[in-house]
Length: 246
Image (cartoon, rainbow, N blue to C red; front, side, top):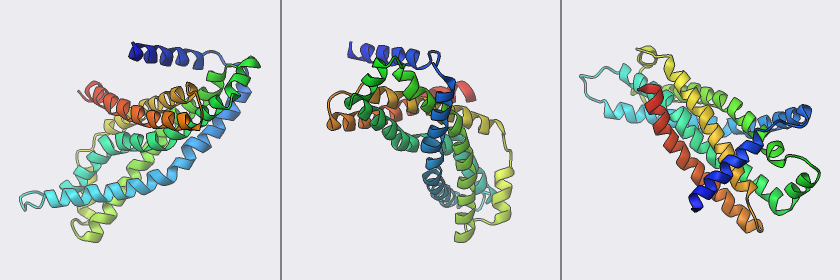
């Protein structure tokens, strides 16, 4: 019964979140703030991780394709497909679940335990919509840009690692990136990223919104938000891959 209770509360919260906003100007200003806090502030960590992951993928691919029968351009091809299909959407989403998911859960949870949300309700404000909707809009719109940036930076990091270690040449790497390129892979990754962003934000906000007690409970809610967001990202990764690539 606890599971059904949790699912019911989650969808009831979403119903409140997507109800008609009272004042659009206020929501617009809050959304712009969330763009900076949840989106722009995540660029650094995504760029750093993408460079190193692109480098690791390229080097590992090179060592696994040392057979002289295999052309060296396969290194660039394998790095491209790994980054486009999986890394720049799923792995980046898992990173964001830890970064922005814990941030959202702790922020809203702190407002709950300090009775700020109760104060909003007393003033007649739809606290769920006011606090959560701008975050959902900001993450769903900005996360695909993070995904695109991760693709570019990851492929660049792979090129730097491949050329500097001597496992491939610039010509072979670029040829591998271009070889049999399917543009739909980018669309597929962006669709996944937008859905993952919605899951991260809504699940984290749910755990923060229903936090009760003190700072210890807020910390537990943040942990639950990260864990459950990660689980649902992996679950929906399987579902979306089957639906979009089959």
